[in-house]
Image 1: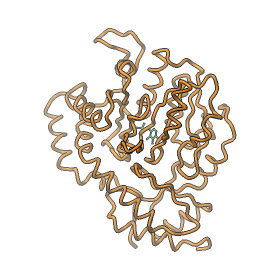
Image 2 (image 1 turned 90 degrees about the horizontal axis):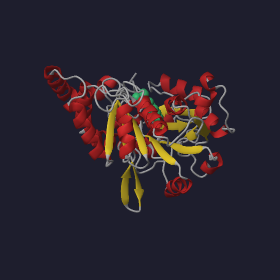
Image 3 (image 1 turned 90 degrees about the vertical axis):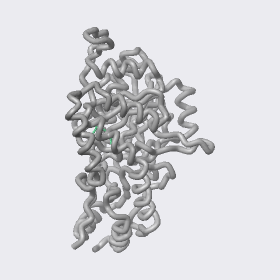
Length: 373
Ligand SMILES: *Cc1c(COP(=O)(O)O)cnc(C)c1O
């Protein structure tokens, strides 16, 4: 039987193999493995791509988020015990970064249509201790609105973007396109191998138009040292290495093609899936479709059916952070929408390395799904 794997990283990187091998050789022969031209080049190129003043490369997406919040604390912009609103249905890394900086994560309800923060409900989570909203562009869909931005400015809140899943996404603001990663005060990127721009290992980045924040992030990521052997702060080692930067520079040049391929796959699903048991996500023009996530009531039966027909699926995410043992003590408002989504979401294959025609076939398989089959 024909197989439709959820993702194959080998296939994802196959089109770039010759280029990747060539740059790997370049780095190996350079004798420079950290703090070199590749990292500096990648930072310049990502900064130009997103249209944001500063990019600081780092070790992974969680560290990018941690560095942003720790830098805000270090700069005195946020203090221990201050609150950060975060979508309740995000990947746990978003929440870990907040609590790791001594801040309090306040999980907020998503919208069942967009799977992103329900921006209409946001103000109910804001208290005098709120300092920021972590806008997670979940599944590659931009979490943004003009009234959200206006509310944050009016209340003096920072908007931090978790752009781990949404590199290349945009929102239309009165005809002008604004890229995610350049919308808020600071943004974290992840280049985990499965992300739309995936390294061949771990890597991440912070982007911000705030020069003081960028400088503090860079210092904290380098042992808290601004000038060699001078340490004004207690920092960390969160470097991106030259090999990963070189690989990412190759793939960044192909990112727009990758995004276009993912958008065509999502369009096939959007047009061809027609089954009243399967709720499709709201299709935003600027989304980059890191995941294509449907909601189905009897999820296990649906997944078993797809698996029996060769279609691989995954779940993002089965247990929301506020229900994880590590956050057992976390106070929060009732989160029925997030909890229902956690029990009904199913991620379908969407990878650009799977031929476009396969998605018509997957849609047909989905359309034949009945409750009792
Ligand atoms: C992948 C991801 C992260 C963490 O990135 P890593 O590079 O794996 O540390 C954070 N937030 C979201 C939403 C992610 O999808």
